[in-house]
Length: 275
Length: 121
Image 1 (tube, one colour):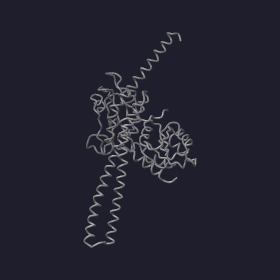
Image 2 (tube, rainbow over the protein chains, first blue to last red; image 1 turned 135 degrees about the vertical axis):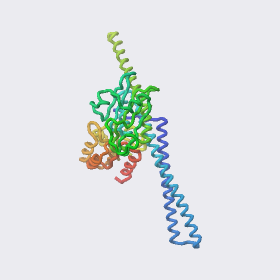
Image 3 (spheres, rainbow over the protein chains, first blue to last red; image 1 turned 90 degrees about the horizontal axis):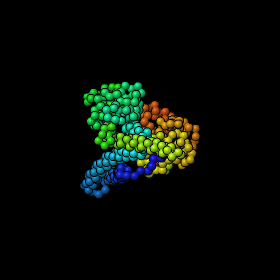
Image 4 (cartoon, rainbow over the protein chains, first blue to last red; image 1 turned 180 degrees about the vertical axis):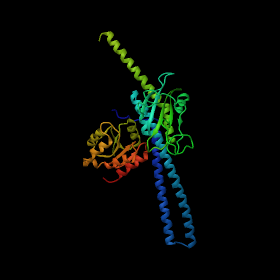
């Protein structure tokens, strides 16, 4: 198995600078915390020693307290910014890695495997299906099904049977749909808190596009137990899959078909030459 | 510092490359591969281990490691999509030092690594 190539590019640069920002923010946060400690120690020293006149000492205490509050507010703000930056860096890293790996191979099997790995490892999907339309007017084939039995009435048997409203709509208009999740963990209409998940219910239907043509959909049916719902950063990944997964897969399939034809032609030429 | 990452997913190897770019990474794609790497690189400081892998999975790797004093000294952080309590418990029972559930934030893993690498060996 080949080792992943070290990558370059804009997204990586973004994730690297995000990481550096996190380091800088951490350092600043540490310095601010140190400042708070110094101020607190000064305050307690002042109260204990009572240096200077009583009025001067009281004024200094007030001033130091005000500085302490300001420093505490700074620490809080920096902590919030650190959390945001870490979150942003993580999001960019996921997007970079997913894009990189989707376009790292021209082997259709490997590209499909990468789509599955993104769904499992980055989105936290347990059950999902990748639907692809080979030709106009033909049902979508199920190119990939994870956690779905062969005999499944909708996604089993190699082709999508249709009839799931959210998926059909996405295949029709190419709009990414994410279900509203009820409080009980199941997808459902708003206000249906605590409802059990119905069989076949869809959490997300992601259109797969090549240029402006809708060539299929990624259907997410269930998430891992410890992943309660799809968040904002997941939405970014779903958008990325929508734009890149199909084109990566189609490029790989085209390359593979072209390669097969080339080999057949070469064999024919060799045969004609009597080699 | 050498970190061995063990996962059958190329995507995850790429992810670790970006996430742990300040460290020297060793790559293995299953448990057997991981054991070989550890024998070749005795100065490995931490192992980041997936559970579901072909040939020898993460739990089998932990069982092998249990029988070897040198390998037992290298901390293992299990990273898995299996998030049930019994999965975590099983891995820790077999000698894993930490358990991180996929998908995870970079900070979860880096903090776990830091915890083991900052402690004196």
